[in-house]
Length: 426
Image (cartoon, rainbow, N blue to C red):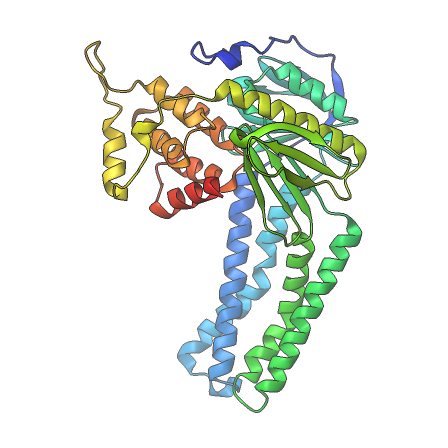
């Protein structure tokens, strides 16, 4: 990968040669198609259940359903039967075990020898690389510009870190996401969700007994407790995301903790929490409950690295891209005019590189970063699109990531910008 001459942090990364060939397991996760299949399954199931619930409430006896609605009823029943199929297929695409391979990593990319075949991933196609520790070994998750992901499973965190270091990516291409959800907590959450839904619907059935509503409520009683069990089982887990701009953490059903790196003076650990000492105000503590010491140490190290990178990336001409009191349409029109096709030595217009620096600047307001990305997309080169995607993926703030990704596609709406701005203001 070639260093950007205008990006000093990227030039400071040593250009590592190929690491020693490592034995690993490799798989490609087709995230885009998996997401589309899950969405299709969700809408099919939800729509079918809603249609059946409505029709059963209006027509308690099947014999009273008008002939015209028989086809609708048949399609709804078919939808309930068919909905699990795309969902199962989406999970198979993600959960298939990787294949044994030998992996080489260098600053030009990854070379994976699987049997007699070789797969090469150019460094220019890598948007983000994240090491995700596991109970046994670790995964190096490499996100491609296409939106898909390669997962390289190694025997240890050190091996995955060695591959990541050999890639010699720009420092702001690193974000660490760590999720953990012990089985005991997961089972307890699932049982809580199941019993809560079952008891609630049992009371509802008693309340509507003798009315037309008893049929749809009884129908919901069959499926809702299982949906609630899955939802509660997932929500009791822990997640911490540390990017170049800040920290985002959520534990169970508690409120998400968000902290911008500009507020942080230092990071340490007391054994049970990550402690972020703030420039002003009380320290922010992120729980490390149920996390083993090795991964606690890894998370602390990544937080300290992110704080150092923040200082390197800060500083840009963000003011022209701030929305301020302008209407959304006025703002979009104004930021587009900031990047004319031709800029002369007499022009005071902003250069495209200046706009890219705003997108990458973790200290810039969220609306300015989104606005700069949106302005760039009119005449964006492949390299500019890559840098915008990297900036999006390296952010620790979920709504900022979504807004920047939408800007990359030219599909930003006012709600996305306001939500991203509000998230950064928390």
